[in-house]
Image 1: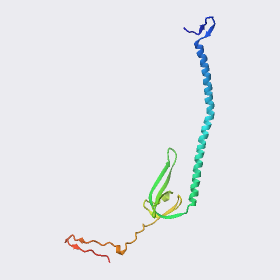
Image 2: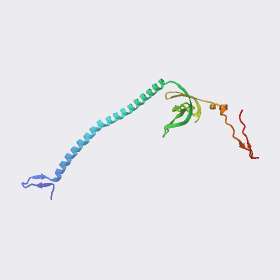
Image 3: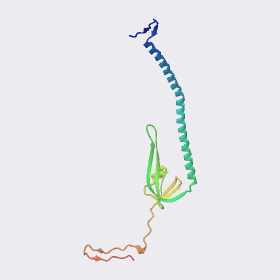
Image 4: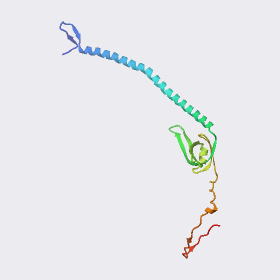
Length: 189
């Protein structure tokens, strides 16, 4: 049986296992304290580093957006102002925001198809121009690069050219429903 003290053969007292455990606990506590201290010191290095990285990512994203906007603006200014006959293919809205206490913003887009070559392009338009257009409207589209300048709707759709006289269809012979006799067709003069 082990007690607090164990006697050696020569009569000297020796610390018991319990006391050795206490000494081990003290060294463990000391090691734990140094580990906690090093973790605490590492936090003073890691947290500012993490915040700095986040800051750089946000600033970098803002700079990239500004550079892209300037590049698109310069590209649009370098393009010629084009005026083509086009039809409205479709219109759409994109609503963003509006959650909780924030206001919503709506962006309006219209897709045009040129009559000549069938090229489709989508432009961001103002709310008043969006509301004045309908699917299928034909008119004069003015744009510069990706920048919408205007759309003037034609009042009446253009009429197809008249058929030449030689190509005028001839009415076929028909049967009279009353007498069941054949009636000859009347040719156009």
